[in-house]
Image 1 (cartoon, rainbow, N blue to C red):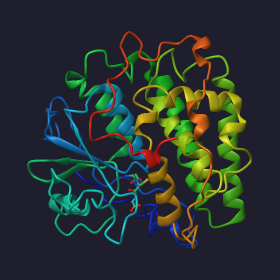
Image 2 (image 1 turned 180 degrees about the vertical axis):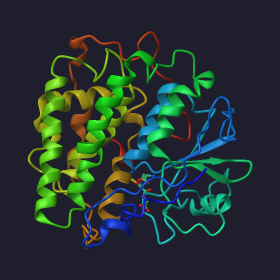
Image 3 (image 1 turned 135 degrees about the horizontal axis):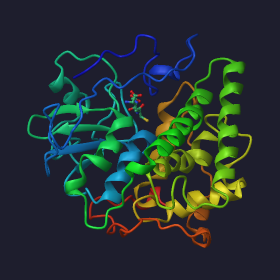
Image 4 (image 1 turned 135 degrees about the vertical axis):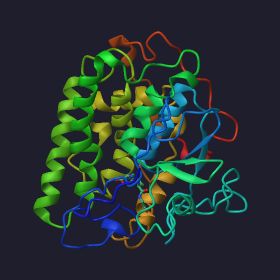
Length: 349
Ligand SMILES: N[C@@H](CCC(=O)N[C@@H](CS)C(=O)NCC(=O)O)C(=O)O
């Protein structure tokens, strides 16, 4: 199943898209390929060990959700991983981090080739996260909102022993409500601020970002996680924005009322998650900074990548254990990162 992109949208952010200064306000384009990989294979893509490849950029907040989920759920072997170069060229995401510039499993140089295999002549945006069917080389889905929910629920039989329930049935209404607000005001709010083309639009987005951060700070003052007493999908989605905040959104996107490190509650919450196996070990600050500051040349024409911020604080004690909470519920933390998937030194605090 595929659906046409919303004609009311201005395209994906990135080298083209909203990096330019058109007159239309920033609107996120809808994902184009919305097939689901499910237990019952209702869209013809059944969950199967080793069949699919998750393509990400470690720079991308939407793809990073899937990186964290895959680690927490122990899907490392069941769903293999391709990491794209944080710097796209005019054909978008490419596999230039690999020695011969090709993904070793899919054998392709550009993610666009998997889109083309799926839909010959496809000329829309190419985005991560994407899941590709290895045998056919076809893109299955780039529906970032759905991918992690399906990893948590449809892929259950392939989860590791001790995997947490990231989307527990009895808490779904509350999780959905929190995630909707976080998406609108924060995950996407920072982009609305960053790509605003008018003062009013920017200030509205900036206001939404900080109003939401203040509300979340209040909510998290006396509870360790956003919903219930364990890590859920809601925490993953908040984390991927918080971890980019001071490095990118504060300066590059002008979300600068204050830094994350100036909010004691949110800073401790973000450090707690960062230091939890499966979160911080997926984060590459080098990829994050180079992607935003180099690729989004409309916002940063010189392409100069800032030296700061100092990252050493990410590893300092957070004391959030004192709030109780059971990070993995009745489960256990994931194993250390597998060989070959560790974030290089340059990207770590
Ligand atoms: N599929 C999602 C997008 C996820 C997304 O926007 N990913 C960004 C990277 S953070 C991307 O791949 N953009 C395409 C590009 O920059 O060329 C959508 O359609 O909004």
